[in-house]
Length: 393
Image (tube, rainbow, N blue to C red; front, side, top):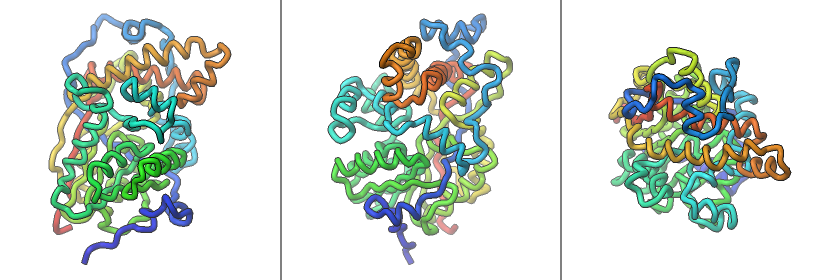
């Protein structure tokens, strides 16, 4: 018998009751895994501050986190009120950060015309092989297409796909447009993101992309509901103690024989000195997530939940040019604004870009710059994970 589809949440965009039933406070997981990143570009004679200054052209990021900064996102549970507040602050209701992460023409169109009037990717994740892509927009969308292709649902009629951590719906709407017979359900812990995603889907007249507010650790969906699950840089928000529950829940949702594809950051090794600890601290605090697990930890979590590991691969080289672009945007667009934040109108501009305060913007800038050092020093890497629920599960 074919498992019933979670229609109550699938129709949530048009039903307040269904939307209400899907509301569970919380936030996604973290996954990650590791290995060796690209060739080292780090000069061992540099201090952390010198490295950041050389990349940014300014020393304003010095001590951005401070020695007493929280070592992770600052919450113990994705289901906590604090997690919701921090992530609301990080992503902000305006989606300003999303608007900045695109080709210049798309950024301008989103600012002038709004989400409904432009072809902005609306996806806040690394782009794939940016150096070879026609544009940043194409690189960002290619990451999503690759994740979707690895679900292997080409022969499945009208597949139902789940995206935990959908943001403002850019990836889900791309898939819905790419595969009209496919139904995509996205879920986010940030209510304002869900509202923006619904407005974007309405503007595109999409009936096969729906968005819910909720907690991926305890979803309202039936067992074996989905033909595929993908998560791109969204499962990196669950503290270590809640990761087993996350894997178990996502395993429960998949139909036997179906796949889950995850692209996310990872921990490669522990920092060895204060300089290295500073880089890690900047990234975790500025991007508001706990320390990712290692590849072995990821594999163990997956197997314990009942998954088979199909593939686990370091793909840092494929996203490194994209990481450099993020650093450039932070260096040349955001950093100058934080330096003149006290001037009339600048604080309002930072707020429109998704920052709750100048300090929030400075933390974000520090993370964008320090991510390159994390890759270059081999502290972290970007990984692709392909899991499968056994056919007889």
